[in-house]
Length: 390
Ligand SMILES: Nc1nc2c(ncn2[C@@H]2O[C@H](COP(=O)(O)OP(=O)(O)OP(=O)(O)O)[C@@H](O)[C@H]2O)c(=O)[nH]1
Ligand SMILES: [Mg+2]
Image 1: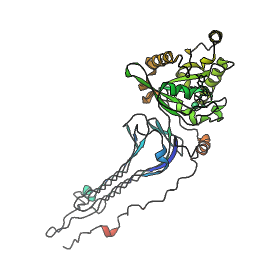
Image 2 (image 1 turned 180 degrees about the horizontal axis):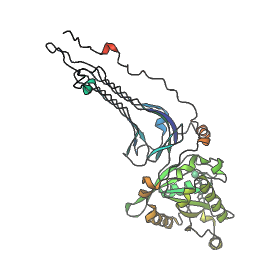
Image 3 (image 1 turned 45 degrees about the vertical axis):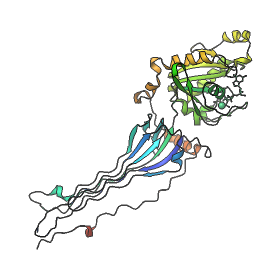
Image 4 (image 1 turned 120 degrees about the horizontal axis):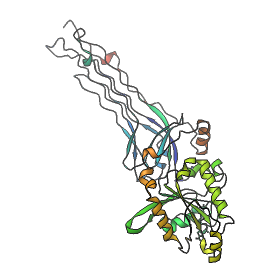
Protein backbone atom coordinates (compact mmCIF):
# COMPACT_ATOMS: atom_id res chain seq x y z
CA UNK A 1 0.00 0.00 0.00
CA UNK A 2 3.08 2.22 0.02
CA UNK A 3 2.19 3.86 -3.30
CA UNK A 4 -1.33 4.77 -2.24
CA UNK A 5 -2.26 8.23 -1.07
CA UNK A 6 -4.64 6.85 1.48
CA UNK A 7 -2.35 6.44 4.49
CA UNK A 8 -4.02 5.32 7.67
CA UNK A 9 -1.06 3.92 9.58
CA UNK A 10 2.29 5.56 10.31
CA UNK A 11 5.09 5.16 12.78
CA UNK A 12 6.98 8.26 13.88
CA UNK A 13 9.46 9.29 16.55
CA UNK A 14 8.51 12.18 18.80
CA UNK A 15 10.71 13.94 21.29
CA UNK A 16 9.99 16.82 23.59
CA UNK A 17 12.66 19.35 24.57
CA UNK A 18 14.69 19.16 27.73
CA UNK A 19 14.58 21.92 30.28
CA UNK A 20 17.35 24.49 30.35
CA UNK A 21 19.79 24.57 33.27
CA UNK A 22 19.54 27.15 35.99
CA UNK A 23 22.48 29.53 36.11
CA UNK A 24 25.02 29.74 38.94
CA UNK A 25 25.98 33.30 38.13
CA UNK A 26 27.07 35.74 40.83
CA UNK A 27 26.21 39.38 40.52
CA UNK A 28 29.14 41.60 39.72
CA UNK A 29 29.25 45.35 39.59
CA UNK A 30 31.62 48.04 40.51
CA UNK A 31 31.20 48.97 44.18
CA UNK A 32 29.06 45.91 44.82
CA UNK A 33 31.73 43.56 46.07
CA UNK A 34 29.51 40.73 47.22
CA UNK A 35 26.67 41.01 44.76
CA UNK A 36 25.29 37.62 45.60
CA UNK A 37 23.74 35.01 43.33
CA UNK A 38 21.78 36.26 40.33
CA UNK A 39 21.62 33.17 38.15
CA UNK A 40 18.32 32.94 36.21
CA UNK A 41 16.19 29.86 35.68
CA UNK A 42 16.36 27.60 32.65
CA UNK A 43 13.51 27.74 30.13
CA UNK A 44 11.15 24.80 29.74
CA UNK A 45 11.60 22.33 26.92
CA UNK A 46 9.10 22.36 24.05
CA UNK A 47 6.03 20.12 24.26
CA UNK A 48 4.69 17.86 21.56
CA UNK A 49 0.97 18.28 20.91
CA UNK A 50 -1.50 16.55 18.65
CA UNK A 51 -4.08 18.77 17.03
CA UNK A 52 -7.24 17.58 15.26
CA UNK A 53 -7.53 19.21 11.86
CA UNK A 54 -10.50 18.52 9.59
CA UNK A 55 -8.56 19.62 6.53
CA UNK A 56 -6.58 16.41 6.71
CA UNK A 57 -8.19 13.15 5.57
CA UNK A 58 -5.23 10.83 5.87
CA UNK A 59 -1.89 10.55 7.65
CA UNK A 60 0.04 10.91 4.38
CA UNK A 61 1.80 14.12 5.46
CA UNK A 62 3.41 12.28 8.37
CA UNK A 63 5.04 9.76 6.05
CA UNK A 64 7.45 12.51 5.08
CA UNK A 65 8.10 13.85 8.54
CA UNK A 66 8.91 10.94 10.76
CA UNK A 67 10.98 12.85 13.30
CA UNK A 68 9.05 15.37 15.29
CA UNK A 69 11.29 17.07 17.81
CA UNK A 70 10.51 20.07 19.94
CA UNK A 71 13.46 22.28 20.86
CA UNK A 72 15.21 22.42 24.22
CA UNK A 73 14.79 25.17 26.77
CA UNK A 74 17.59 27.74 26.97
CA UNK A 75 19.89 27.91 29.99
CA UNK A 76 19.36 30.58 32.58
CA UNK A 77 21.66 33.61 32.41
CA UNK A 78 23.11 36.31 34.56
CA UNK A 79 21.11 39.16 36.09
CA UNK A 80 18.30 36.74 36.80
CA UNK A 81 17.48 36.28 33.14
CA UNK A 82 15.44 33.23 32.38
CA UNK A 83 16.36 30.98 29.47
CA UNK A 84 14.06 30.92 26.45
CA UNK A 85 11.35 28.28 26.41
CA UNK A 86 11.79 25.56 23.82
CA UNK A 87 9.54 25.70 20.77
CA UNK A 88 6.47 23.47 20.91
CA UNK A 89 5.56 21.24 17.99
CA UNK A 90 1.98 20.61 16.88
CA UNK A 91 1.25 17.48 14.90
CA UNK A 92 -1.84 18.02 12.79
CA UNK A 93 -3.86 14.85 12.39
CA UNK A 94 -7.23 14.03 10.85
CA UNK A 95 -10.14 13.55 13.24
CA UNK A 96 -10.34 9.91 14.22
CA UNK A 97 -6.61 9.37 14.80
CA UNK A 98 -5.66 6.95 17.55
CA UNK A 99 -2.13 6.89 18.97
CA UNK A 100 -0.29 3.87 20.39
CA UNK A 101 3.18 3.40 21.84
CA UNK A 102 5.07 1.49 19.13
CA UNK A 103 7.21 -0.42 21.61
CA UNK A 104 4.66 -1.52 24.16
CA UNK A 105 1.49 -1.40 22.06
CA UNK A 106 -0.13 0.68 24.78
CA UNK A 107 -3.01 2.99 23.80
CA UNK A 108 -2.00 6.61 24.43
CA UNK A 109 -4.77 8.91 23.24
CA UNK A 110 -7.12 9.71 20.42
CA UNK A 111 -8.15 12.85 18.61
CA UNK A 112 -11.74 13.05 17.46
CA UNK A 113 -12.60 16.72 17.04
CA UNK A 114 -11.38 19.55 14.88
CA UNK A 115 -9.17 21.88 16.92
CA UNK A 116 -8.84 19.40 19.79
CA UNK A 117 -5.38 19.57 21.32
CA UNK A 118 -3.84 16.67 23.23
CA UNK A 119 -0.44 16.83 24.91
CA UNK A 120 1.57 13.86 23.74
CA UNK A 121 4.93 14.56 25.39
CA UNK A 122 5.75 17.23 27.92
CA UNK A 123 8.98 19.15 27.71
CA UNK A 124 11.28 19.09 30.76
CA UNK A 125 10.93 21.91 33.29
CA UNK A 126 13.77 24.38 33.43
CA UNK A 127 16.10 24.19 36.42
CA UNK A 128 16.08 26.93 39.06
CA UNK A 129 18.96 29.41 39.13
CA UNK A 130 21.23 29.75 42.14
CA UNK A 131 19.43 32.83 43.48
CA UNK A 132 16.62 30.54 44.66
CA UNK A 133 19.03 28.72 46.92
CA UNK A 134 20.48 31.63 48.86
CA UNK A 135 19.87 31.19 52.57
CA UNK A 136 21.03 32.97 55.67
CA UNK A 137 23.90 30.55 56.08
CA UNK A 138 24.77 30.14 52.41
CA UNK A 139 24.40 33.50 50.78
CA UNK A 140 26.36 32.67 47.68
CA UNK A 141 25.27 29.18 46.54
CA UNK A 142 27.34 27.95 43.65
CA UNK A 143 24.88 25.42 42.46
CA UNK A 144 21.72 25.54 40.45
CA UNK A 145 19.28 22.89 39.25
CA UNK A 146 19.79 21.11 35.95
CA UNK A 147 16.78 21.08 33.63
CA UNK A 148 14.46 18.09 33.54
CA UNK A 149 15.22 15.57 30.81
CA UNK A 150 13.28 15.30 27.56
CA UNK A 151 10.88 12.50 26.72
CA UNK A 152 11.05 10.38 23.62
CA UNK A 153 8.55 7.95 22.23
CA UNK A 154 8.04 6.07 18.99
CA UNK A 155 4.33 6.12 18.28
CA UNK A 156 1.98 4.43 15.89
CA UNK A 157 -0.78 6.64 14.57
CA UNK A 158 -3.77 4.87 13.21
CA UNK A 159 -6.65 6.57 11.47
CA UNK A 160 -10.13 5.27 12.06
CA UNK A 161 -12.46 7.22 9.85
CA UNK A 162 -15.31 8.86 11.65
CA UNK A 163 -18.51 8.32 9.73
CA UNK A 164 -22.13 7.91 10.73
CA UNK A 165 -22.80 4.98 8.47
CA UNK A 166 -20.27 2.34 7.42
CA UNK A 167 -21.00 0.10 4.43
CA UNK A 168 -20.22 -3.55 5.02
CA UNK A 169 -20.50 -6.05 2.19
CA UNK A 170 -18.77 -8.56 -0.02
CA UNK A 171 -16.88 -7.26 -3.04
CA UNK A 172 -19.29 -6.34 -5.86
CA UNK A 173 -22.23 -5.87 -3.50
CA UNK A 174 -22.81 -2.39 -4.87
CA UNK A 175 -21.35 -0.34 -2.00
CA UNK A 176 -19.57 2.21 -4.14
CA UNK A 177 -22.58 2.48 -6.46
CA UNK A 178 -24.77 3.31 -3.47
CA UNK A 179 -22.34 5.91 -2.15
CA UNK A 180 -22.17 7.61 -5.53
CA UNK A 181 -25.97 7.53 -5.88
CA UNK A 182 -26.50 9.14 -2.47
CA UNK A 183 -23.61 11.60 -2.33
CA UNK A 184 -21.32 13.49 -4.61
CA UNK A 185 -18.43 11.15 -3.84
CA UNK A 186 -17.23 9.39 -6.98
CA UNK A 187 -15.59 6.12 -5.98
CA UNK A 188 -14.55 3.78 -8.78
CA UNK A 189 -17.28 1.32 -9.73
CA UNK A 190 -16.77 -1.83 -11.80
CA UNK A 191 -18.12 -5.34 -12.13
CA UNK A 192 -15.12 -7.08 -10.63
CA UNK A 193 -14.29 -7.75 -6.97
CA UNK A 194 -12.04 -5.39 -5.01
CA UNK A 195 -12.64 -2.39 -7.22
CA UNK A 196 -12.45 -0.28 -4.11
CA UNK A 197 -8.97 -0.49 -2.65
CA UNK A 198 -9.20 2.29 -0.12
CA UNK A 199 -12.01 3.80 1.92
CA UNK A 200 -13.83 6.92 0.82
CA UNK A 201 -16.32 9.16 2.53
CA UNK A 202 -19.40 10.86 1.14
CA UNK A 203 -21.84 13.33 2.61
CA UNK A 204 -25.43 12.23 2.14
CA UNK A 205 -27.90 15.08 2.21
CA UNK A 206 -31.17 14.51 3.93
CA UNK A 207 -34.23 16.70 4.36
CA UNK A 208 -34.04 20.31 5.55
CA UNK A 209 -30.36 20.67 4.78
CA UNK A 210 -29.38 17.96 7.25
CA UNK A 211 -26.78 15.42 6.29
CA UNK A 212 -24.78 12.46 7.47
CA UNK A 213 -21.47 10.90 6.50
CA UNK A 214 -21.22 7.52 4.82
CA UNK A 215 -18.02 5.49 4.48
CA UNK A 216 -17.44 3.06 1.64
CA UNK A 217 -14.80 0.55 2.62
CA UNK A 218 -13.28 -2.24 0.53
CA UNK A 219 -15.21 -5.50 0.38
CA UNK A 220 -14.97 -8.08 3.13
CA UNK A 221 -14.71 -11.79 2.40
CA UNK A 222 -14.96 -14.86 4.58
CA UNK A 223 -11.74 -15.04 6.59
CA UNK A 224 -11.10 -11.27 6.39
CA UNK A 225 -10.59 -11.12 10.12
CA UNK A 226 -7.72 -13.59 9.71
CA UNK A 227 -6.17 -11.49 6.97
CA UNK A 228 -7.83 -12.83 3.77
CA UNK A 229 -8.62 -10.47 0.90
CA UNK A 230 -7.78 -6.94 1.92
CA UNK A 231 -8.23 -8.34 5.39
CA UNK A 232 -7.95 -6.44 8.57
CA UNK A 233 -6.46 -3.38 6.97
CA UNK A 234 -9.75 -1.65 6.47
CA UNK A 235 -11.97 -3.24 9.06
CA UNK A 236 -10.74 -0.71 11.59
CA UNK A 237 -12.57 2.00 9.67
CA UNK A 238 -15.91 0.61 10.71
CA UNK A 239 -15.02 0.68 14.40
CA UNK A 240 -15.96 4.32 14.69
CA UNK A 241 -19.13 4.30 12.59
CA UNK A 242 -22.27 4.64 14.61
CA UNK A 243 -24.27 2.41 12.34
CA UNK A 244 -23.37 -0.43 10.03
CA UNK A 245 -25.25 -0.85 6.77
CA UNK A 246 -24.81 -4.44 5.64
CA UNK A 247 -25.25 -4.94 1.92
CA UNK A 248 -26.06 -8.22 0.19
CA UNK A 249 -26.97 -8.40 -3.52
CA UNK A 250 -30.50 -9.57 -4.28
CA UNK A 251 -29.28 -12.18 -6.76
CA UNK A 252 -27.35 -14.06 -4.06
CA UNK A 253 -28.45 -17.64 -3.40
CA UNK A 254 -28.89 -17.26 0.32
CA UNK A 255 -29.16 -13.70 1.64
CA UNK A 256 -29.44 -14.79 5.26
CA UNK A 257 -26.30 -16.91 5.03
CA UNK A 258 -24.23 -14.13 3.42
CA UNK A 259 -25.36 -11.69 6.07
CA UNK A 260 -24.34 -14.26 8.70
CA UNK A 261 -20.84 -14.58 7.21
CA UNK A 262 -20.36 -10.80 7.15
CA UNK A 263 -21.59 -10.46 10.69
CA UNK A 264 -19.30 -13.23 11.85
CA UNK A 265 -16.23 -11.56 10.30
CA UNK A 266 -17.10 -8.23 11.87
CA UNK A 267 -17.62 -9.90 15.24
CA UNK A 268 -14.35 -11.84 15.05
CA UNK A 269 -12.50 -8.62 14.27
CA UNK A 270 -13.92 -6.80 17.27
CA UNK A 271 -16.81 -8.19 19.31
CA UNK A 272 -17.72 -4.68 20.48
CA UNK A 273 -18.90 -3.94 16.96
CA UNK A 274 -21.88 -6.17 17.70
CA UNK A 275 -23.25 -3.43 19.92
CA UNK A 276 -23.66 -1.13 16.96
CA UNK A 277 -26.99 -0.71 15.31
CA UNK A 278 -27.31 -2.57 12.02
CA UNK A 279 -29.46 -2.25 8.91
CA UNK A 280 -29.51 -4.70 6.00
CA UNK A 281 -29.96 -3.52 2.42
CA UNK A 282 -30.66 -6.07 -0.28
CA UNK A 283 -29.05 -4.41 -3.30
CA UNK A 284 -29.58 -4.68 -7.05
CA UNK A 285 -33.29 -5.26 -6.52
CA UNK A 286 -33.92 -4.08 -10.08
CA UNK A 287 -32.78 -7.56 -11.06
CA UNK A 288 -35.64 -9.11 -9.06
CA UNK A 289 -39.34 -9.14 -9.98
CA UNK A 290 -42.13 -8.55 -7.47
CA UNK A 291 -42.75 -12.24 -7.04
CA UNK A 292 -39.14 -12.98 -6.24
CA UNK A 293 -39.01 -10.10 -3.75
CA UNK A 294 -42.07 -11.60 -2.03
CA UNK A 295 -40.42 -14.99 -1.92
CA UNK A 296 -37.09 -13.70 -0.62
CA UNK A 297 -38.87 -11.65 2.03
CA UNK A 298 -40.02 -14.89 3.67
CA UNK A 299 -36.51 -15.81 4.62
CA UNK A 300 -34.64 -12.74 5.83
CA UNK A 301 -32.84 -12.10 9.11
CA UNK A 302 -35.35 -10.88 11.67
CA UNK A 303 -33.24 -8.98 14.16
CA UNK A 304 -32.70 -5.86 12.05
CA UNK A 305 -34.51 -3.60 9.56
CA UNK A 306 -34.23 -4.94 5.99
CA UNK A 307 -34.87 -2.95 2.84
CA UNK A 308 -34.69 -3.77 -0.86
CA UNK A 309 -32.86 -1.11 -2.85
CA UNK A 310 -31.40 -0.45 -6.26
CA UNK A 311 -28.83 2.26 -6.61
CA UNK A 312 -28.96 2.02 -10.40
CA UNK A 313 -32.69 2.70 -10.79
CA UNK A 314 -32.83 4.76 -7.56
CA UNK A 315 -35.33 2.42 -5.93
CA UNK A 316 -35.83 2.42 -2.18
CA UNK A 317 -33.16 5.06 -1.61
CA UNK A 318 -35.45 7.58 0.09
CA UNK A 319 -36.78 4.89 2.42
CA UNK A 320 -33.22 3.78 3.11
CA UNK A 321 -32.22 7.33 4.06
CA UNK A 322 -35.27 7.55 6.33
CA UNK A 323 -34.32 4.32 8.10
CA UNK A 324 -30.69 5.40 8.48
CA UNK A 325 -31.62 8.86 9.72
CA UNK A 326 -34.06 7.52 12.29
CA UNK A 327 -31.53 5.00 13.52
CA UNK A 328 -28.74 7.58 13.67
CA UNK A 329 -30.85 9.89 15.73
CA UNK A 330 -32.03 7.33 18.20
CA UNK A 331 -30.65 8.30 21.59
CA UNK A 332 -28.06 5.54 21.86
CA UNK A 333 -26.58 6.28 18.51
CA UNK A 334 -25.84 9.92 17.97
CA UNK A 335 -22.48 10.55 16.35
CA UNK A 336 -21.74 12.93 19.20
CA UNK A 337 -22.05 10.10 21.66
CA UNK A 338 -19.73 7.74 19.82
CA UNK A 339 -16.99 10.31 19.77
CA UNK A 340 -17.22 10.84 23.48
CA UNK A 341 -14.22 9.41 25.26
CA UNK A 342 -16.04 7.13 27.62
CA UNK A 343 -18.09 5.39 24.97
CA UNK A 344 -15.09 4.28 22.94
CA UNK A 345 -13.15 1.45 24.41
CA UNK A 346 -9.59 1.41 23.13
CA UNK A 347 -7.69 -1.80 23.41
CA UNK A 348 -3.93 -1.90 23.68
CA UNK A 349 -2.23 -3.58 20.77
CA UNK A 350 -1.41 -7.23 21.21
CA UNK A 351 2.40 -7.32 21.53
CA UNK A 352 2.60 -10.80 20.02
CA UNK A 353 0.93 -9.55 16.85
CA UNK A 354 2.38 -6.02 16.76
CA UNK A 355 5.52 -6.89 14.77
CA UNK A 356 3.45 -8.72 12.18
CA UNK A 357 1.05 -5.79 11.98
CA UNK A 358 3.92 -3.34 11.43
CA UNK A 359 5.25 -5.59 8.68
CA UNK A 360 1.86 -5.81 6.98
CA UNK A 361 1.61 -2.05 7.02
CA UNK A 362 5.15 -1.62 5.70
CA UNK A 363 6.10 0.29 8.83
CA UNK A 364 8.51 -2.22 10.41
CA UNK A 365 11.72 -0.45 9.40
CA UNK A 366 13.43 1.21 12.34
CA UNK A 367 13.39 4.99 12.17
CA UNK A 368 16.91 6.32 12.20
CA UNK A 369 17.44 9.15 14.59
CA UNK A 370 20.56 11.20 13.98
CA UNK A 371 21.21 12.27 17.48
CA UNK A 372 20.93 15.99 17.38
CA UNK A 373 23.50 17.96 19.24
CA UNK A 374 22.49 18.46 22.78
CA UNK A 375 22.60 21.86 24.33
CA UNK A 376 26.02 22.17 25.82
CA UNK A 377 26.08 21.59 29.48
CA UNK A 378 27.41 24.40 31.52
CA UNK A 379 31.07 24.07 32.26
CA UNK A 380 33.17 26.13 34.57
CA UNK A 381 33.88 28.77 31.92
CA UNK A 382 30.24 29.79 31.96
CA UNK A 383 30.28 30.49 35.64
CA UNK A 384 31.56 33.80 36.78
CA UNK A 385 33.11 33.28 40.16
CA UNK A 386 33.07 36.18 42.58
CA UNK A 387 36.40 37.35 43.63
CA UNK A 388 36.03 37.41 47.38
CA UNK A 389 39.17 39.55 47.83
CA UNK A 390 37.52 42.52 46.09
N1 LIG B 1 -28.31 -4.03 -11.72
C1 LIG B 1 -27.66 -3.39 -10.76
N2 LIG B 1 -26.31 -3.46 -10.74
C2 LIG B 1 -25.67 -2.81 -9.75
C3 LIG B 1 -26.36 -2.09 -8.75
N3 LIG B 1 -25.46 -1.55 -7.89
C4 LIG B 1 -24.23 -1.93 -8.36
N4 LIG B 1 -24.35 -2.67 -9.48
C5 LIG B 1 -23.26 -3.25 -10.26
O1 LIG B 1 -22.50 -4.12 -9.47
C6 LIG B 1 -21.12 -4.03 -9.80
C7 LIG B 1 -20.29 -3.76 -8.56
O2 LIG B 1 -20.62 -2.49 -8.04
P1 LIG B 1 -19.67 -1.67 -7.03
O3 LIG B 1 -20.46 -0.52 -6.55
O4 LIG B 1 -18.35 -1.42 -7.67
O5 LIG B 1 -19.51 -2.76 -5.90
P2 LIG B 1 -18.65 -2.65 -4.56
O6 LIG B 1 -19.46 -3.27 -3.49
O7 LIG B 1 -18.21 -1.26 -4.35
O8 LIG B 1 -17.45 -3.59 -4.93
P3 LIG B 1 -15.94 -3.57 -4.37
O9 LIG B 1 -15.47 -2.17 -4.43
O10 LIG B 1 -15.20 -4.45 -5.30
O11 LIG B 1 -16.00 -4.12 -2.98
C8 LIG B 1 -21.01 -2.93 -10.84
O12 LIG B 1 -20.90 -3.52 -12.10
C9 LIG B 1 -22.29 -2.16 -10.70
O13 LIG B 1 -22.70 -1.59 -11.91
C10 LIG B 1 -27.81 -2.07 -8.80
O14 LIG B 1 -28.49 -1.46 -7.98
N5 LIG B 1 -28.37 -2.74 -9.83
MG1 LIG C 1 -16.41 -0.44 -4.31
